[in-house]
Amino acid sequence: MKKYIEIILIGLIVFVGCEDKDTEPEFSEVPSIFTKKVLIEEFTGSWCGYCPVGALIVEDLMTENENIIGVGVHVDDAMEIEQSNFLETTYQNSSYPSGMVDRTPYDGAVSLNAGYWSYFVNNQLLITSTCGLAMRSKVSGNTATVEVHAGFNTELDGDYRVTVYLIEDEVTGSGYGYDQANYYDSESESPFYGLGNPIVGYEHNNTLRAVLSESLGDPLDDSVLIAGGEYVEVYTADISSFEKKNLHAVAFIHHVGSTFTEHEILNVQKVSVTGFQDWD
Image (cartoon, rainbow, N blue to C red; front, side, top):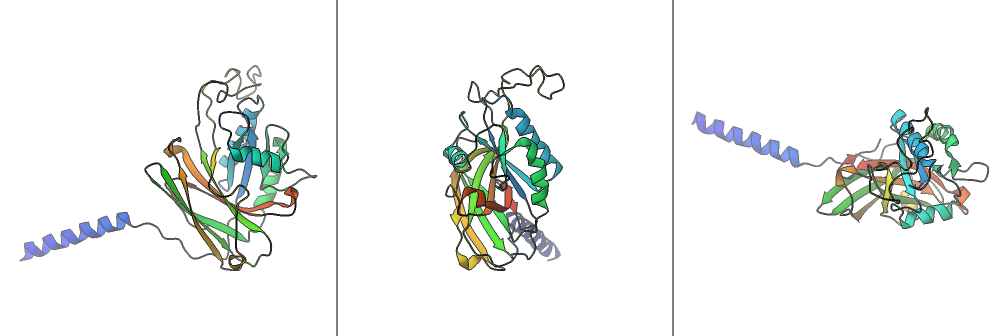
């Protein structure tokens, strides 16, 4: 009899252990305080000989502070997508590398020279955020499913939207569309010295691969723009052309003004394509 009871207890332990392993984490309630995170959307291209430095600046900023999220918007190369042209046209970008820091303007421009990024990033990090995001992403076969939660801690009035990106690290390829032009090949003090011009096999990180929402974001109903309000939406993407282990989903809440200089990103969140990120 004793032996029989021991067998039952072992079975229960195994059952409970398996059940816990399969349980998915749950999103917590919308908090009253959100961590402010900053998005840098960098305009770049494999043909641009100055762009390796732009990419390095973004990587360094992200390394220094985990609340900084970078996205590489490629134009006129093999990694360009429709959103690239939409962003370049909408925000009137005219130089490379350049980038938008939470899409905030300076002196009538939104796409700024790389020398300004650190200053504006630090300014944005000081803002007390009125909203935040939580995310879950899963993969089944060649389809990624991204669940996005946007929450608010105060009442807002205006046109607010959520945009969702899919980005990929370590993107490589061969030829003009991927090999990175490098104007620093002969500069001995540069980290890109002696790597060739172009840099063959260059790894492009934070590369914008797809937009899962509308180009300028999916509008939020006024009913969620209140303290404790929450928007929930599920997005899907075909990831058959990408390397799953290098994929992340990025979602951000932004205000859309009457002109492009009045648009502004309020907060941003990032999660692995097979990950979970609660409110923070």
